[in-house]
Image 1 (tube, rainbow, N blue to C red):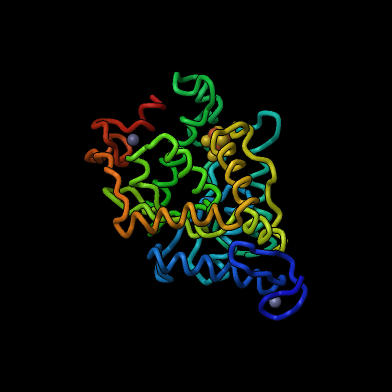
Image 2 (spheres, protein in one colour):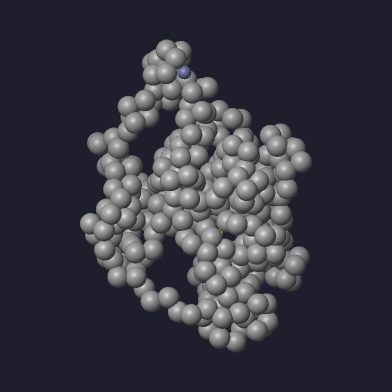
Length: 305
Ligand code: Q46
Ligand code: ZN
Ligand code: ZN
């Protein structure tokens, strides 16, 4: 297999782009794809500070690596959730983030918030002590992560929070939302969520990359990442849809990409429209000052009460 650009030995076949690339040209291609998405969707500019949400996994570390290689002012942010069911997930996550900096970008800034140390309870403990997390701690976890991220972004003057979501992640969510005709979600699912009322802008620069490509990028760049998913992510519905879409992709290369990118295109061009969910007005929480719809205390502060 020969590289479509230089004729050297190709290491990957990107069927959906009809491209075969060698190591060097593949790395270059990934960086270009991210840069194009950043510009196309006006995610941020070199003048902006960007906060990258890193979990120690391949997507988030690859994203941080790409942004730093592109010269963006990208700082990392990781939240220690205190999850160690079966595997020492949280400890390993943090260790991989630190190793990444030491090996690839010494001197880069990583913001670490340890939920257990800072607030007195880890996520599993917190979930057990509230009604919300009786079965899985994910609802509590998601809310706590969003709150902390937003706080760090706001306090640090970051223009955006960047996450490592790839095309497979987004296509799986799209499939789920489509199967259930969740119009409100379909109206909002996007590579950029605009800033509003004290909620930081959220961006996904890897939106055009397949998961196998971000994995290959991490491998070729020799990024040491955590292979295991969070133990609570096992059996998640999105994983099921990802598998389904991969079956479709096998039969028809490019199907995943078409499904997701054509959706964005059709919606942006007004070919399909979905009724937006009414967005409730946000007011600052009386305790922490973060935006909340409830009036009074935000859900995060109420949780700790
Ligand atoms: S929400 Fe749930 Fe994730 Fe939190 S408890 Fe793990 S799986 S980390 S994306
Ligand atoms: Zn080449
Ligand atoms: Zn609050």
